[in-house]
Structures are given as C-alpha cells and as structure tokens.
Length: 260
Image (cartoon, rainbow, N blue to C red; front, side, top):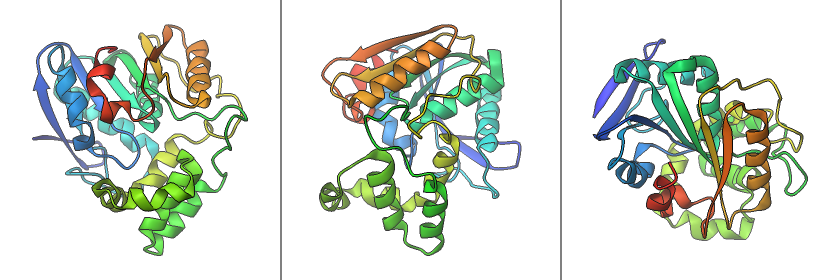
C-alpha cells in the first residue's frame, strides 16, 4: 500500500498493480478499494492499475467538512504521484465523480470508462427524494447507520424492501454500515442527476475519449442515462455488456475489464 496527501492534508491510500498505461479505479457508493480487487486484477494484465480508497473509507482519512471538491483534490494528488495522465474507471456514483474530476483536471485525465452512471432522467423509476442527503445525515447523526443503508438501498438504488433482510446476512452489509457516513458524500456528488429530469447540459466538459457501458440485463433507466450522457459529451460512445447487470464490476470483473 502507498499513500498520498490531499490538498487539505487528508491521507489517501492506494495500491498499484500491473503494467501498462495508467488506470485509476473510482469506487462507487459505500465501497472501498477491496470491493474492486477483482476488477483491478482483471485490468492489471494490460494496465498499471491504481486502486484507491476514497476519503472516509478503508485506509484513507476523512477531514471535515466534506465537499465534493475535496474528492477531486484527492484524485489530483493521486495523479501527481502517478506522474502521467490516467484513464479513470468508475461505476455508478463513481462515474459522476470521475466526470467531475475529468472536467476539473483536463489533460491529466486521459479518458473515462464509466459503467452504469447512476442517473435517473425519466419516469421509468422513481426519482431519488429531494431530501435524500439530509435524511441520510440525520440517520447517521442519530447512530441509525443500518437504517441509513436501508434508506439508500430502497430510495436511491431501488431495491424492494423485502429483499433487505437476506442482504443484511451478507458480510458486505456490515461494511456498508461502517461507511454509512459516506452515503451523503455520494448524494452530494450526484446531486442534480437523479431527479427524473434531463442531465445538466453544462456540468461536464470532457475532451478525452469516454466509453459509457450498461449491462444488458440492467433496468432501462441505466441505459437511458448512459445514452443521454453520450449525447452531451464531445467524444463519447455507448456500449452494452451482454448478459450482465449493475453488479458486473464485482461479479463479472473479467467481462467488464475486456471492454476497457
């Protein structure tokens, strides 16, 4: 493991594997770098992979007050340490952070591979509640962290409530509960993209090549969001991963890596 120090003094931990052009994996909500170890291993045969813990997770620090700009600074510090432009590989909410970083950091980002950005731009599913961030922050402040994860799962992800009890038996649930305070972080990052309205036309300015992929078996809103993003960017393409859904970066990392 290596570390870098972000602009506000926060320590950011990362691991480097493989050989080839630089890749940085940007984890999704309530996940740390180890959740994507499989994807890192699959990419390492062709790339030098830098897999990092976003602030507030794993072995990285977390300096209040939080703002999405701090996470862009974290990526800037990591790119400085790498010493060359890198392809950012993001999933779900991590896609939005990767887009924001590419817009802010320009040529320091060589490209983006985005798997199922968590956009809600039509009425094919309910929008995320307007008070989502405030509700999550209140539940965490009241030490109701498991309830905060339940709220995220049902209202942001769209998991039916009856599916939650089996999910709680999985070790990943306890890890998400541990990272419950970061649910609001990602809520702030994706703000304005999950309301059931079109994506903001002027938020992202990315000249580097972008590939946006959705799983064949995923709900239609992931595909519609991906297509809408491609239409907004100067150099982007849309693709489909046959036979897979939103879980592919964890459950089928080799299949995802083959499209990068």
